[in-house]
Length: 238
Image 1 (cartoon, rainbow, N blue to C red):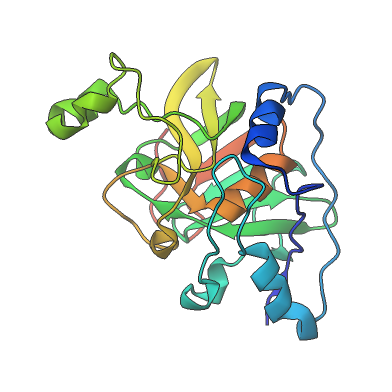
Image 2: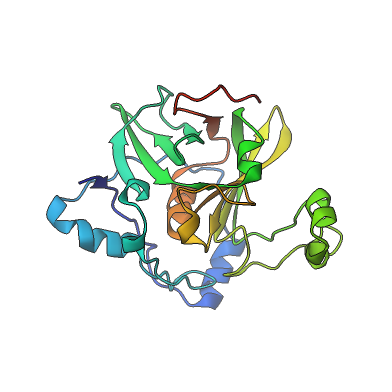
């Protein structure tokens, strides 16, 4: 039975209006990586999973619960032995196994399951989380719009897609830069929980919305990130 990481709820359940005010005043300048939370006993696993993947009524766009019983337990948020060898505070995306790790002290890491699209295999190497956004707008690149003309209404010129439950970037997005340049590579939420652990047609690194909220709260701007393949496959090229 995996050790499951305890979900850390928001301080209070806010109304949509109050959540919007909190979003406007949000800052990440003084954030620090948080300590590894206590791990519950096995007897509490089911109730903890229900808490971790339950509804989020305090969100600007309230999130429905995720039917976690239908997801392979390997992809639940959980505390594991760190396989990456990276220093604490580093994010590691393991594209070969569809995992994302947040490395902590004492040889531990929080592991999340992820889904990968074509863009998720398009970049590898080292970078930083330049900035983060809550309930971001989605602006598909012009190249994608050229391939899929039906996305023209969401183009950069048209201002992108409004945030919301159907927005492909989900509840949170983390933007990866390398050497000061935008890689166009994102870690983001997704309402399509059934794609976690799979390779799908579009997107970068997608997470369950409840998981990307948890990750967003744990890492500050400037967090180092490594995108690699720990499965033993051919080395990825940056």
